[in-house]
Length: 624
Image 1 (cartoon, rainbow, N blue to C red):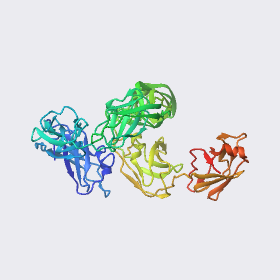
Image 2 (cartoon, one colour):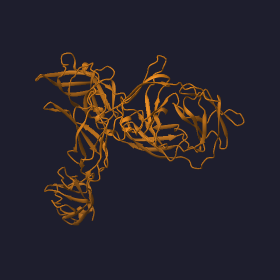
Image 3 (cartoon, rainbow, N blue to C red):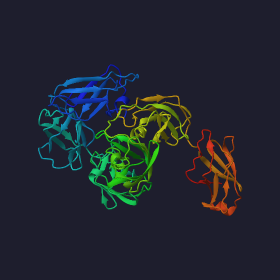
Image 4 (cartoon, helix red, strand yellow):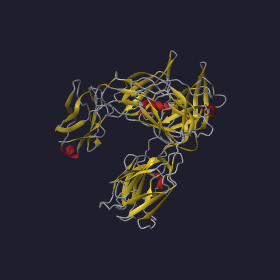
Protein backbone atom coordinates (compact mmCIF):
# COMPACT_ATOMS: atom_id res chain seq x y z
CA UNK A 1 0.00 0.00 0.00
CA UNK A 2 2.65 2.50 1.14
CA UNK A 3 5.84 2.52 3.20
CA UNK A 4 4.14 2.22 6.59
CA UNK A 5 0.99 0.20 5.88
CA UNK A 6 0.70 -3.53 5.23
CA UNK A 7 -2.47 -5.47 4.44
CA UNK A 8 -3.07 -8.92 5.95
CA UNK A 9 -5.87 -11.03 4.42
CA UNK A 10 -7.86 -13.69 6.33
CA UNK A 11 -10.09 -16.46 5.04
CA UNK A 12 -12.75 -15.72 7.67
CA UNK A 13 -13.81 -12.85 9.90
CA UNK A 14 -11.25 -12.08 12.62
CA UNK A 15 -12.25 -11.27 16.19
CA UNK A 16 -11.10 -7.73 17.07
CA UNK A 17 -11.10 -8.58 20.78
CA UNK A 18 -8.25 -11.06 20.28
CA UNK A 19 -6.33 -8.51 18.18
CA UNK A 20 -6.55 -5.15 19.92
CA UNK A 21 -6.10 -4.06 23.50
CA UNK A 22 -9.26 -1.98 23.37
CA UNK A 23 -11.15 -4.68 21.48
CA UNK A 24 -11.68 -2.43 18.43
CA UNK A 25 -8.55 -1.03 16.77
CA UNK A 26 -5.18 0.61 17.39
CA UNK A 27 -2.61 -1.01 19.69
CA UNK A 28 -2.29 -4.79 19.39
CA UNK A 29 -2.62 -7.29 22.21
CA UNK A 30 0.83 -8.50 23.31
CA UNK A 31 2.35 -11.37 21.28
CA UNK A 32 -0.24 -11.31 18.47
CA UNK A 33 1.37 -9.37 15.60
CA UNK A 34 5.14 -8.87 15.21
CA UNK A 35 7.43 -7.61 12.40
CA UNK A 36 11.16 -8.28 12.84
CA UNK A 37 13.69 -6.94 10.34
CA UNK A 38 16.04 -9.61 8.96
CA UNK A 39 18.25 -7.67 6.53
CA UNK A 40 20.92 -5.48 8.11
CA UNK A 41 19.90 -2.54 5.93
CA UNK A 42 16.23 -2.81 6.88
CA UNK A 43 14.79 -0.43 9.45
CA UNK A 44 12.98 -1.75 12.50
CA UNK A 45 9.23 -1.52 11.94
CA UNK A 46 8.72 0.22 15.28
CA UNK A 47 5.43 0.21 17.16
CA UNK A 48 2.54 -1.42 15.31
CA UNK A 49 -1.12 -0.42 15.16
CA UNK A 50 -3.99 -1.92 13.22
CA UNK A 51 -7.45 -1.50 11.75
CA UNK A 52 -9.88 -4.25 10.69
CA UNK A 53 -12.03 -3.87 7.60
CA UNK A 54 -15.83 -3.82 7.96
CA UNK A 55 -16.07 -7.51 7.00
CA UNK A 56 -13.25 -8.41 9.41
CA UNK A 57 -11.24 -10.21 6.72
CA UNK A 58 -8.58 -7.56 6.05
CA UNK A 59 -6.20 -6.23 8.68
CA UNK A 60 -4.30 -3.04 7.85
CA UNK A 61 -1.12 -2.86 9.93
CA UNK A 62 0.51 0.55 10.33
CA UNK A 63 4.21 0.64 11.23
CA UNK A 64 6.00 3.56 12.86
CA UNK A 65 8.87 3.35 10.37
CA UNK A 66 8.73 2.60 6.66
CA UNK A 67 9.30 -1.11 5.98
CA UNK A 68 11.46 -2.31 3.11
CA UNK A 69 13.31 -5.58 2.39
CA UNK A 70 12.82 -8.79 4.44
CA UNK A 71 10.88 -9.13 7.69
CA UNK A 72 9.92 -12.10 9.83
CA UNK A 73 6.15 -11.63 10.19
CA UNK A 74 4.47 -13.53 13.04
CA UNK A 75 0.71 -13.53 13.63
CA UNK A 76 -0.44 -15.85 16.41
CA UNK A 77 -3.05 -16.35 19.15
CA UNK A 78 -5.65 -14.81 16.82
CA UNK A 79 -9.29 -15.84 17.10
CA UNK A 80 -11.99 -15.85 14.46
CA UNK A 81 -15.49 -14.54 15.13
CA UNK A 82 -16.81 -18.11 15.13
CA UNK A 83 -14.53 -18.96 18.05
CA UNK A 84 -11.94 -20.95 16.13
CA UNK A 85 -8.21 -20.15 16.26
CA UNK A 86 -6.25 -19.09 13.19
CA UNK A 87 -3.22 -21.20 12.39
CA UNK A 88 -0.04 -19.39 13.45
CA UNK A 89 1.55 -17.45 10.61
CA UNK A 90 5.35 -17.32 10.85
CA UNK A 91 7.15 -16.51 7.61
CA UNK A 92 9.69 -14.22 5.99
CA UNK A 93 8.04 -11.55 3.84
CA UNK A 94 9.80 -9.22 1.44
CA UNK A 95 8.28 -5.75 1.28
CA UNK A 96 9.02 -3.70 -1.80
CA UNK A 97 10.20 -0.18 -1.04
CA UNK A 98 7.64 2.59 -1.56
CA UNK A 99 8.76 4.67 -4.55
CA UNK A 100 5.41 6.30 -5.38
CA UNK A 101 5.29 10.04 -4.75
CA UNK A 102 2.36 11.37 -2.74
CA UNK A 103 -0.07 13.81 -4.33
CA UNK A 104 -2.78 16.21 -3.16
CA UNK A 105 -6.15 14.51 -3.74
CA UNK A 106 -8.56 17.22 -2.63
CA UNK A 107 -9.10 20.46 -0.73
CA UNK A 108 -12.41 20.69 1.14
CA UNK A 109 -13.80 23.84 2.75
CA UNK A 110 -15.04 22.71 6.17
CA UNK A 111 -16.21 26.14 7.34
CA UNK A 112 -15.73 29.82 6.59
CA UNK A 113 -12.14 29.65 7.78
CA UNK A 114 -11.06 25.98 7.82
CA UNK A 115 -9.92 23.84 4.90
CA UNK A 116 -8.86 20.17 4.93
CA UNK A 117 -6.24 19.04 2.42
CA UNK A 118 -6.19 15.27 1.73
CA UNK A 119 -3.08 13.52 0.41
CA UNK A 120 -2.96 10.25 -1.53
CA UNK A 121 -1.11 8.60 1.41
CA UNK A 122 0.08 9.57 4.90
CA UNK A 123 2.82 12.19 4.98
CA UNK A 124 5.51 12.18 7.64
CA UNK A 125 6.84 15.71 7.01
CA UNK A 126 4.95 18.70 5.68
CA UNK A 127 8.12 20.59 4.82
CA UNK A 128 8.01 24.38 4.40
CA UNK A 129 4.64 26.10 3.99
CA UNK A 130 4.38 29.73 2.82
CA UNK A 131 1.26 31.82 2.21
CA UNK A 132 0.38 34.70 -0.10
CA UNK A 133 -2.75 36.54 -1.24
CA UNK A 134 -4.03 36.24 -4.82
CA UNK A 135 -2.19 39.43 -5.77
CA UNK A 136 1.12 37.94 -4.59
CA UNK A 137 1.34 39.87 -1.30
CA UNK A 138 2.80 37.70 1.46
CA UNK A 139 0.49 36.65 4.30
CA UNK A 140 2.49 37.28 7.45
CA UNK A 141 -0.13 36.23 10.03
CA UNK A 142 -3.60 34.77 10.29
CA UNK A 143 -3.29 31.21 8.93
CA UNK A 144 -1.86 28.00 10.35
CA UNK A 145 -2.08 24.23 9.96
CA UNK A 146 -2.47 21.35 12.45
CA UNK A 147 0.19 18.96 11.14
CA UNK A 148 2.15 17.39 14.01
CA UNK A 149 2.44 13.68 13.14
CA UNK A 150 2.01 11.23 10.27
CA UNK A 151 -1.40 11.72 8.62
CA UNK A 152 -3.08 11.88 5.23
CA UNK A 153 -5.20 14.94 6.18
CA UNK A 154 -4.03 18.41 7.19
CA UNK A 155 -6.40 21.19 8.23
CA UNK A 156 -5.56 24.84 7.51
CA UNK A 157 -7.28 27.50 9.64
CA UNK A 158 -7.60 31.24 8.96
CA UNK A 159 -8.02 33.59 11.92
CA UNK A 160 -9.75 36.97 12.10
CA UNK A 161 -6.57 38.62 10.78
CA UNK A 162 -7.64 37.59 7.28
CA UNK A 163 -10.68 39.41 5.93
CA UNK A 164 -13.72 37.64 4.51
CA UNK A 165 -13.53 37.09 0.76
CA UNK A 166 -9.73 37.08 0.66
CA UNK A 167 -8.01 34.35 -1.39
CA UNK A 168 -4.96 32.74 0.21
CA UNK A 169 -2.57 30.47 -1.70
CA UNK A 170 -0.51 28.02 0.38
CA UNK A 171 2.70 26.67 -1.16
CA UNK A 172 4.10 23.37 0.14
CA UNK A 173 7.79 22.64 -0.45
CA UNK A 174 9.53 19.43 0.62
CA UNK A 175 6.44 17.52 1.75
CA UNK A 176 7.36 13.82 2.14
CA UNK A 177 5.57 10.52 2.67
CA UNK A 178 6.69 7.89 5.20
CA UNK A 179 9.20 6.50 2.70
CA UNK A 180 10.72 9.98 2.14
CA UNK A 181 9.19 10.35 -1.35
CA UNK A 182 8.63 14.03 -2.16
CA UNK A 183 5.18 15.38 -2.99
CA UNK A 184 4.52 15.74 -6.71
CA UNK A 185 4.52 18.37 -8.00
CA UNK A 186 7.07 19.92 -5.68
CA UNK A 187 6.33 22.66 -4.81
CA UNK A 188 2.54 22.23 -4.77
CA UNK A 189 -0.10 24.89 -4.12
CA UNK A 190 -3.49 24.95 -2.39
CA UNK A 191 -5.98 27.80 -2.90
CA UNK A 192 -8.39 28.82 -0.12
CA UNK A 193 -11.02 31.59 0.00
CA UNK A 194 -11.98 33.01 3.42
CA UNK A 195 -15.73 32.98 4.04
CA UNK A 196 -17.87 35.61 5.75
CA UNK A 197 -18.36 35.86 9.53
CA UNK A 198 -21.41 33.94 10.73
CA UNK A 199 -22.62 36.78 12.97
CA UNK A 200 -22.61 34.71 16.18
CA UNK A 201 -19.68 35.09 18.56
CA UNK A 202 -18.50 32.01 20.52
CA UNK A 203 -19.05 31.98 24.29
CA UNK A 204 -17.81 29.96 27.25
CA UNK A 205 -20.59 27.52 28.14
CA UNK A 206 -19.27 25.74 31.22
CA UNK A 207 -16.16 25.35 33.35
CA UNK A 208 -16.08 22.08 35.29
CA UNK A 209 -13.49 20.53 37.61
CA UNK A 210 -12.34 17.05 36.55
CA UNK A 211 -9.50 16.34 38.99
CA UNK A 212 -7.23 17.70 41.68
CA UNK A 213 -5.45 19.96 39.18
CA UNK A 214 -7.63 19.65 36.08
CA UNK A 215 -10.81 21.18 34.70
CA UNK A 216 -12.57 21.55 31.36
CA UNK A 217 -13.71 24.61 29.46
CA UNK A 218 -16.57 24.06 27.03
CA UNK A 219 -17.46 26.60 24.34
CA UNK A 220 -20.73 27.20 22.54
CA UNK A 221 -19.16 26.21 19.22
CA UNK A 222 -15.91 24.95 17.71
CA UNK A 223 -12.94 27.33 17.80
CA UNK A 224 -10.44 28.09 15.08
CA UNK A 225 -7.61 27.34 17.51
CA UNK A 226 -6.95 26.99 21.23
CA UNK A 227 -7.87 30.05 23.32
CA UNK A 228 -4.89 32.38 23.66
CA UNK A 229 -5.08 32.75 27.44
CA UNK A 230 -6.66 30.88 30.33
CA UNK A 231 -5.93 32.13 33.85
CA UNK A 232 -6.80 30.66 37.23
CA UNK A 233 -6.41 33.40 39.81
CA UNK A 234 -3.01 34.94 39.06
CA UNK A 235 -1.67 31.82 37.29
CA UNK A 236 -1.61 31.80 33.49
CA UNK A 237 -1.99 28.27 32.13
CA UNK A 238 0.87 27.16 29.87
CA UNK A 239 -0.16 26.60 26.24
CA UNK A 240 0.77 22.91 26.32
CA UNK A 241 -1.55 22.40 29.32
CA UNK A 242 -4.64 23.30 27.28
CA UNK A 243 -5.60 20.30 25.15
CA UNK A 244 -8.55 19.97 22.79
CA UNK A 245 -10.75 16.92 23.41
CA UNK A 246 -10.38 14.16 20.81
CA UNK A 247 -14.14 13.57 20.42
CA UNK A 248 -15.79 16.89 21.35
CA UNK A 249 -14.19 19.79 19.38
CA UNK A 250 -15.86 22.36 21.65
CA UNK A 251 -14.24 20.97 24.83
CA UNK A 252 -10.75 21.78 26.17
CA UNK A 253 -8.92 19.97 28.99
CA UNK A 254 -6.88 22.28 31.22
CA UNK A 255 -4.18 21.34 33.74
CA UNK A 256 -3.47 23.96 36.40
CA UNK A 257 0.02 24.41 37.90
CA UNK A 258 -1.27 23.84 41.43
CA UNK A 259 -4.00 21.99 43.30
CA UNK A 260 -7.42 23.52 42.70
CA UNK A 261 -9.10 24.54 45.96
CA UNK A 262 -11.85 27.00 46.89
CA UNK A 263 -13.29 29.90 44.95
CA UNK A 264 -11.05 30.95 42.04
CA UNK A 265 -11.52 33.43 39.21
CA UNK A 266 -11.08 31.73 35.83
CA UNK A 267 -10.51 34.07 32.88
CA UNK A 268 -10.69 32.84 29.27
CA UNK A 269 -9.68 35.21 26.47
CA UNK A 270 -8.41 35.27 22.91
CA UNK A 271 -10.77 32.84 21.18
CA UNK A 272 -12.71 32.91 17.92
CA UNK A 273 -14.98 30.53 16.04
CA UNK A 274 -14.34 28.90 12.69
CA UNK A 275 -15.81 31.85 10.79
CA UNK A 276 -13.49 34.31 12.54
CA UNK A 277 -16.00 35.77 15.02
CA UNK A 278 -14.11 36.82 18.17
CA UNK A 279 -15.42 35.83 21.57
CA UNK A 280 -15.55 38.29 24.46
CA UNK A 281 -13.15 37.74 27.37
CA UNK A 282 -15.01 35.69 29.97
CA UNK A 283 -14.42 35.81 33.71
CA UNK A 284 -16.16 33.31 35.99
CA UNK A 285 -15.82 32.46 39.65
CA UNK A 286 -15.52 28.70 39.99
CA UNK A 287 -15.66 26.93 43.34
CA UNK A 288 -13.13 24.09 43.21
CA UNK A 289 -13.16 21.22 45.68
CA UNK A 290 -9.88 19.82 46.93
CA UNK A 291 -9.75 16.04 46.90
CA UNK A 292 -8.98 15.35 50.56
CA UNK A 293 -9.33 11.56 50.36
CA UNK A 294 -6.05 9.66 50.73
CA UNK A 295 -5.11 7.17 48.00
CA UNK A 296 -5.47 3.52 49.08
CA UNK A 297 -3.69 0.43 47.77
CA UNK A 298 -6.30 -1.53 45.82
CA UNK A 299 -4.07 -4.49 45.02
CA UNK A 300 -0.49 -5.73 45.32
CA UNK A 301 1.17 -8.34 43.16
CA UNK A 302 4.62 -9.63 42.31
CA UNK A 303 5.47 -9.03 38.64
CA UNK A 304 8.46 -9.88 36.51
CA UNK A 305 9.89 -6.90 34.67
CA UNK A 306 10.13 -7.49 30.94
CA UNK A 307 13.43 -5.61 30.74
CA UNK A 308 15.56 -6.99 33.58
CA UNK A 309 13.55 -10.15 34.42
CA UNK A 310 13.66 -9.19 38.10
CA UNK A 311 10.72 -9.43 40.45
CA UNK A 312 8.97 -6.28 41.60
CA UNK A 313 6.21 -5.71 44.11
CA UNK A 314 3.60 -3.83 42.10
CA UNK A 315 1.15 -1.71 44.09
CA UNK A 316 -1.99 -0.36 42.42
CA UNK A 317 -3.75 2.55 44.14
CA UNK A 318 -7.41 3.50 43.74
CA UNK A 319 -6.44 6.85 42.18
CA UNK A 320 -3.47 8.52 40.48
CA UNK A 321 -0.49 9.20 42.74
CA UNK A 322 2.47 11.57 42.54
CA UNK A 323 6.02 10.59 43.55
CA UNK A 324 8.47 13.06 45.02
CA UNK A 325 12.20 12.65 44.39
CA UNK A 326 13.43 9.75 46.50
CA UNK A 327 9.92 8.45 47.28
CA UNK A 328 10.17 5.18 49.17
CA UNK A 329 8.27 2.43 50.93
CA UNK A 330 9.13 0.88 54.29
CA UNK A 331 7.95 -2.61 55.19
CA UNK A 332 7.60 -4.32 58.57
CA UNK A 333 6.11 -7.68 59.41
CA UNK A 334 7.24 -11.25 58.87
CA UNK A 335 7.99 -13.97 56.35
CA UNK A 336 7.39 -17.70 56.56
CA UNK A 337 9.73 -20.34 55.12
CA UNK A 338 9.59 -24.07 55.91
CA UNK A 339 6.95 -23.34 58.60
CA UNK A 340 9.32 -21.00 60.43
CA UNK A 341 8.19 -17.41 60.96
CA UNK A 342 10.87 -14.69 60.82
CA UNK A 343 10.47 -11.00 61.65
CA UNK A 344 11.23 -8.13 59.27
CA UNK A 345 11.62 -4.67 60.77
CA UNK A 346 13.41 -2.47 58.26
CA UNK A 347 12.69 -3.38 54.65
CA UNK A 348 13.09 -0.16 52.68
CA UNK A 349 13.56 0.87 49.05
CA UNK A 350 12.78 3.57 46.54
CA UNK A 351 9.54 3.21 44.58
CA UNK A 352 9.15 3.98 40.89
CA UNK A 353 5.98 4.94 39.04
CA UNK A 354 4.68 2.98 36.07
CA UNK A 355 5.36 4.79 32.80
CA UNK A 356 1.77 4.64 31.55
CA UNK A 357 -0.44 4.17 34.63
CA UNK A 358 -0.16 6.79 37.37
CA UNK A 359 -2.03 4.53 39.78
CA UNK A 360 0.78 1.97 39.78
CA UNK A 361 4.14 2.05 41.59
CA UNK A 362 6.79 -0.65 41.81
CA UNK A 363 9.58 -1.58 44.18
CA UNK A 364 12.48 -3.91 43.34
CA UNK A 365 12.14 -6.87 45.74
CA UNK A 366 15.86 -7.61 45.71
CA UNK A 367 16.60 -4.09 46.98
CA UNK A 368 13.54 -3.90 49.22
CA UNK A 369 14.02 -7.15 51.13
CA UNK A 370 17.78 -6.87 51.58
CA UNK A 371 20.34 -9.65 51.92
CA UNK A 372 19.32 -11.45 55.10
CA UNK A 373 15.54 -11.39 54.62
CA UNK A 374 15.29 -11.99 50.86
CA UNK A 375 14.34 -15.69 50.75
CA UNK A 376 13.21 -17.48 47.63
CA UNK A 377 9.89 -19.29 48.13
CA UNK A 378 9.09 -17.47 51.38
CA UNK A 379 5.65 -15.93 51.96
CA UNK A 380 5.76 -12.33 53.20
CA UNK A 381 3.14 -10.48 55.25
CA UNK A 382 4.11 -6.81 55.46
CA UNK A 383 2.70 -3.53 56.69
CA UNK A 384 3.75 -0.84 54.21
CA UNK A 385 4.40 2.82 55.00
CA UNK A 386 5.14 5.33 52.24
CA UNK A 387 7.03 8.60 52.12
CA UNK A 388 6.94 10.99 49.18
CA UNK A 389 3.86 9.30 47.65
CA UNK A 390 0.75 11.49 47.55
CA UNK A 391 -2.42 12.07 45.59
CA UNK A 392 -2.43 14.76 42.90
CA UNK A 393 -3.91 17.00 45.61
CA UNK A 394 -0.90 16.38 47.86
CA UNK A 395 -2.61 14.04 50.34
CA UNK A 396 -0.30 11.32 51.70
CA UNK A 397 -1.27 7.77 50.75
CA UNK A 398 -2.62 5.47 53.43
CA UNK A 399 -0.62 2.68 55.00
CA UNK A 400 -1.22 -0.71 53.39
CA UNK A 401 -0.80 -4.43 53.86
CA UNK A 402 0.70 -6.79 51.32
CA UNK A 403 1.00 -10.57 51.18
CA UNK A 404 3.16 -12.16 48.49
CA UNK A 405 5.47 -15.07 47.76
CA UNK A 406 9.03 -14.33 46.70
CA UNK A 407 10.19 -16.04 43.54
CA UNK A 408 13.53 -15.93 41.82
CA UNK A 409 15.01 -13.01 39.88
CA UNK A 410 16.10 -13.60 36.33
CA UNK A 411 13.19 -15.87 35.50
CA UNK A 412 11.48 -14.58 32.34
CA UNK A 413 7.75 -14.12 32.17
CA UNK A 414 5.87 -17.40 32.06
CA UNK A 415 3.47 -18.63 29.39
CA UNK A 416 0.74 -19.43 31.91
CA UNK A 417 -2.80 -18.59 30.79
CA UNK A 418 -5.38 -17.87 33.46
CA UNK A 419 -8.96 -19.17 33.30
CA UNK A 420 -12.22 -18.13 34.94
CA UNK A 421 -13.71 -20.87 37.13
CA UNK A 422 -16.80 -19.07 38.48
CA UNK A 423 -18.84 -15.87 38.15
CA UNK A 424 -21.29 -15.22 41.01
CA UNK A 425 -23.34 -12.51 42.66
CA UNK A 426 -21.15 -10.77 45.25
CA UNK A 427 -21.81 -9.89 48.88
CA UNK A 428 -24.43 -7.34 47.77
CA UNK A 429 -26.19 -6.36 44.57
CA UNK A 430 -23.46 -3.87 43.64
CA UNK A 431 -20.79 -6.59 43.45
CA UNK A 432 -19.99 -9.53 41.19
CA UNK A 433 -17.41 -12.14 42.22
CA UNK A 434 -15.08 -13.55 39.52
CA UNK A 435 -12.85 -16.47 40.51
CA UNK A 436 -9.66 -17.26 38.55
CA UNK A 437 -7.87 -20.62 38.62
CA UNK A 438 -4.52 -19.09 39.66
CA UNK A 439 -2.93 -15.88 40.89
CA UNK A 440 -3.39 -13.05 38.40
CA UNK A 441 -1.54 -9.95 37.25
CA UNK A 442 -2.92 -7.01 39.25
CA UNK A 443 -2.84 -4.37 36.51
CA UNK A 444 -4.84 -6.44 34.03
CA UNK A 445 -7.18 -7.99 36.62
CA UNK A 446 -8.18 -4.58 38.05
CA UNK A 447 -8.80 -2.98 34.65
CA UNK A 448 -12.57 -2.45 34.58
CA UNK A 449 -12.51 -2.37 30.77
CA UNK A 450 -11.69 -6.11 30.79
CA UNK A 451 -15.13 -6.96 32.19
CA UNK A 452 -18.40 -6.37 30.34
CA UNK A 453 -21.85 -7.18 31.73
CA UNK A 454 -24.86 -6.58 29.51
CA UNK A 455 -27.29 -4.26 31.25
CA UNK A 456 -24.84 -3.11 33.95
CA UNK A 457 -21.78 -0.88 34.28
CA UNK A 458 -18.55 -2.14 35.89
CA UNK A 459 -17.21 0.94 37.65
CA UNK A 460 -14.09 -0.53 39.29
CA UNK A 461 -12.46 -3.83 40.28
CA UNK A 462 -11.08 -4.89 43.66
CA UNK A 463 -8.57 -7.76 43.67
CA UNK A 464 -8.59 -9.96 46.76
CA UNK A 465 -5.42 -11.75 47.92
CA UNK A 466 -4.66 -15.08 46.23
CA UNK A 467 -5.55 -18.13 48.34
CA UNK A 468 -4.09 -21.63 48.29
CA UNK A 469 -6.05 -24.64 49.57
CA UNK A 470 -5.09 -28.29 49.08
CA UNK A 471 -2.33 -27.21 46.73
CA UNK A 472 -4.69 -25.24 44.46
CA UNK A 473 -4.30 -21.46 44.14
CA UNK A 474 -7.21 -19.22 43.22
CA UNK A 475 -7.74 -15.48 43.22
CA UNK A 476 -10.95 -13.47 43.24
CA UNK A 477 -11.68 -10.17 41.51
CA UNK A 478 -14.71 -8.30 42.84
CA UNK A 479 -16.45 -6.22 40.18
CA UNK A 480 -17.99 -3.08 41.67
CA UNK A 481 -21.08 -2.13 39.69
CA UNK A 482 -22.18 1.46 39.28
CA UNK A 483 -25.08 2.06 41.64
CA UNK A 484 -28.39 1.92 39.80
CA UNK A 485 -26.86 0.72 36.52
CA UNK A 486 -28.38 -2.79 36.70
CA UNK A 487 -32.11 -2.31 36.23
CA UNK A 488 -33.37 -5.89 36.15
CA UNK A 489 -32.88 -9.21 37.90
CA UNK A 490 -31.95 -12.20 35.78
CA UNK A 491 -29.31 -13.84 33.62
CA UNK A 492 -27.19 -11.80 31.27
CA UNK A 493 -24.13 -12.04 29.02
CA UNK A 494 -20.87 -11.55 30.92
CA UNK A 495 -17.60 -11.17 28.97
CA UNK A 496 -14.12 -11.27 30.53
CA UNK A 497 -10.90 -10.80 28.55
CA UNK A 498 -7.27 -9.61 28.57
CA UNK A 499 -6.49 -10.74 32.13
CA UNK A 500 -3.02 -12.27 32.59
CA UNK A 501 -1.72 -14.87 35.01
CA UNK A 502 0.72 -13.52 37.57
CA UNK A 503 4.15 -13.15 35.92
CA UNK A 504 2.82 -14.20 32.51
CA UNK A 505 3.05 -12.32 29.23
CA UNK A 506 0.00 -14.04 27.72
CA UNK A 507 -3.58 -12.88 28.08
CA UNK A 508 -6.44 -15.27 28.82
CA UNK A 509 -8.76 -16.75 26.25
CA UNK A 510 -11.89 -14.55 26.09
CA UNK A 511 -14.50 -15.88 28.53
CA UNK A 512 -18.27 -15.67 27.99
CA UNK A 513 -21.05 -16.89 30.25
CA UNK A 514 -24.79 -16.31 30.25
CA UNK A 515 -25.56 -18.64 33.13
CA UNK A 516 -25.12 -16.20 36.03
CA UNK A 517 -28.18 -14.43 37.41
CA UNK A 518 -27.63 -11.01 38.97
CA UNK A 519 -30.00 -9.00 41.13
CA UNK A 520 -30.96 -5.49 40.04
CA UNK A 521 -29.19 -2.79 42.05
CA UNK A 522 -31.55 0.18 41.75
CA UNK A 523 -32.07 1.32 45.33
CA UNK A 524 -35.57 2.42 46.39
CA UNK A 525 -36.06 6.04 47.51
CA UNK A 526 -38.68 8.00 49.42
CA UNK A 527 -40.76 9.94 46.91
CA UNK A 528 -42.80 11.83 49.52
CA UNK A 529 -43.04 12.28 53.29
CA UNK A 530 -46.19 13.98 54.59
CA UNK A 531 -47.28 14.92 58.09
CA UNK A 532 -50.72 13.29 58.21
CA UNK A 533 -51.23 13.60 61.96
CA UNK A 534 -49.60 15.17 64.98
CA UNK A 535 -48.03 11.76 65.69
CA UNK A 536 -47.91 10.39 62.17
CA UNK A 537 -45.80 10.73 59.00
CA UNK A 538 -46.88 8.94 55.82
CA UNK A 539 -43.98 7.76 53.63
CA UNK A 540 -44.34 6.84 49.96
CA UNK A 541 -41.58 4.80 48.30
CA UNK A 542 -40.49 4.52 44.66
CA UNK A 543 -41.18 0.77 44.80
CA UNK A 544 -42.48 -1.84 47.21
CA UNK A 545 -40.22 -2.28 50.26
CA UNK A 546 -40.09 -4.32 53.46
CA UNK A 547 -38.13 -4.33 56.72
CA UNK A 548 -37.77 -5.95 60.12
CA UNK A 549 -38.26 -4.49 63.57
CA UNK A 550 -35.69 -1.82 64.40
CA UNK A 551 -35.04 1.91 64.28
CA UNK A 552 -34.71 3.39 60.78
CA UNK A 553 -35.02 7.19 61.13
CA UNK A 554 -34.39 10.00 63.57
CA UNK A 555 -36.99 12.79 63.61
CA UNK A 556 -35.35 16.22 63.44
CA UNK A 557 -37.02 19.54 64.30
CA UNK A 558 -35.63 22.52 62.45
CA UNK A 559 -32.81 20.26 61.30
CA UNK A 560 -31.77 19.54 64.89
CA UNK A 561 -31.99 16.37 66.98
CA UNK A 562 -34.50 16.32 69.81
CA UNK A 563 -33.72 15.62 73.46
CA UNK A 564 -34.23 12.82 74.02
CA UNK A 565 -33.69 11.65 70.45
CA UNK A 566 -36.86 10.64 68.63
CA UNK A 567 -35.80 7.50 66.74
CA UNK A 568 -38.56 5.63 64.94
CA UNK A 569 -39.14 2.39 63.04
CA UNK A 570 -40.48 2.66 59.52
CA UNK A 571 -42.71 -0.28 60.44
CA UNK A 572 -43.06 -1.61 56.91
CA UNK A 573 -42.96 -5.23 58.02
CA UNK A 574 -42.44 -8.43 56.05
CA UNK A 575 -45.21 -7.70 53.52
CA UNK A 576 -43.83 -5.40 50.84
CA UNK A 577 -45.68 -2.12 50.34
CA UNK A 578 -45.17 1.29 48.75
CA UNK A 579 -46.82 3.39 51.48
CA UNK A 580 -46.41 3.23 55.26
CA UNK A 581 -47.48 5.32 58.25
CA UNK A 582 -44.69 6.06 60.75
CA UNK A 583 -45.57 6.87 64.34
CA UNK A 584 -43.57 9.74 65.84
CA UNK A 585 -43.58 11.71 69.10
CA UNK A 586 -46.35 14.30 69.11
CA UNK A 587 -45.53 17.62 67.47
CA UNK A 588 -47.14 20.99 68.14
CA UNK A 589 -47.57 24.15 66.08
CA UNK A 590 -44.15 25.47 67.09
CA UNK A 591 -42.34 22.30 65.95
CA UNK A 592 -44.33 22.20 62.73
CA UNK A 593 -43.37 25.82 62.03
CA UNK A 594 -39.67 24.99 62.51
CA UNK A 595 -39.93 22.14 60.01
CA UNK A 596 -39.70 18.37 60.34
CA UNK A 597 -37.25 16.07 58.58
CA UNK A 598 -36.11 12.45 58.80
CA UNK A 599 -32.46 11.42 59.10
CA UNK A 600 -31.52 7.86 58.13
CA UNK A 601 -29.91 5.87 60.95
CA UNK A 602 -27.06 3.39 60.48
CA UNK A 603 -29.52 0.68 61.54
CA UNK A 604 -31.92 1.38 58.66
CA UNK A 605 -33.05 -1.90 57.10
CA UNK A 606 -35.77 -0.85 54.66
CA UNK A 607 -35.10 -2.83 51.46
CA UNK A 608 -36.73 -3.74 48.18
CA UNK A 609 -37.44 -7.32 47.12
CA UNK A 610 -33.94 -7.67 45.63
CA UNK A 611 -32.30 -6.59 48.90
CA UNK A 612 -31.31 -3.06 47.87
CA UNK A 613 -31.29 -0.83 50.96
CA UNK A 614 -33.34 2.38 50.84
CA UNK A 615 -31.18 5.23 49.48
CA UNK A 616 -31.34 8.39 51.65
CA UNK A 617 -28.55 10.66 50.33
CA UNK A 618 -29.92 13.64 52.32
CA UNK A 619 -32.37 14.20 55.12
CA UNK A 620 -35.99 13.71 54.03
CA UNK A 621 -38.07 16.89 54.32
CA UNK A 622 -41.55 16.29 55.74
CA UNK A 623 -44.33 18.34 54.12
CA UNK A 624 -47.90 19.02 55.22
